[in-house]
Amino acid sequence: MYNSLSKEHPISSDLSIVATHGFSELERRLRGVTLKDNPNIHPYLRSKISLKEVAIAELHPCALYVLEENLARVSLLREEFLKRGIDIFHLTTEKSIINYDFQGRLGCSLAPPIVEVSEDDNYLKIITDGLHRVSKARDSGEKTFSIVQIENVAVPLPALPVSWNEVDVCKEVPPSDQKRRYRFNTPEEIKLWQDKNIGRLLTGLPVRFEGDLSSQLWKTRDQTRGEDKYAPWDFPG
Image 1 (cartoon, rainbow, N blue to C red):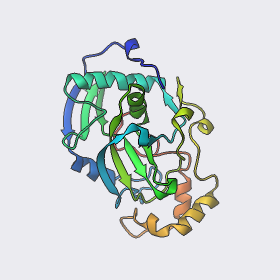
Image 2: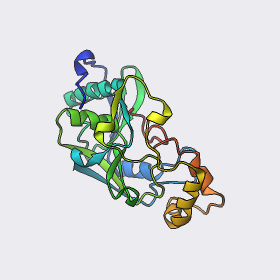
Image 3: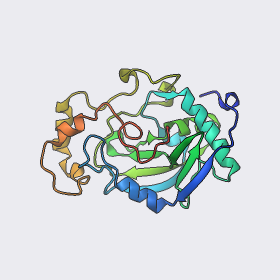
Image 4: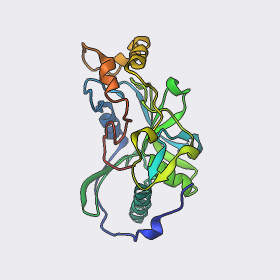
């Protein structure tokens, strides 16, 4: 789908791997993730979380764009990590989080893409974080990818799944109305979802919570998980 941009970016040798962590640490961090505008809700607190190697053909994006710059950075990073015996498209149980410094940026982290599976979208495997990496792998002819699959999430994705042929390569972030297709368009729609799914929503609350959760969810309707909504690591895509 995308032309390789790696030739336009000479390979740098200033990658330094600081530390690696296994899947148990990644799972612990994910269970502690909260919504950006509502720290009371832990969407993955009681979810089923697993590391899987899945067919890329089974994965679905939920954004309508990827950034050219980030695709190029994925290519560059992969080549550098491969020199050190690590394939960032196929991370393992032993190395599920990698802390590294790169090109003057200190304290970077990398983990497998996050894929959510929910009845909200007929159990499709939806990429909520890591779209650039999966996009580059798909373009490069990779057949599988190592992902973190999360099931039984407490809240629905704000964005709806889209097809790969709807994803555009952009030089800059597009306007908000061209970034995603949203599940909810009014606060009333969220309130209706909450009323029907209160049991599911409560699975994301570690303590007793009193208040209008729907108004809190509405605050984040224009954001998705990953780098926009919450980010357990800072890899851009």
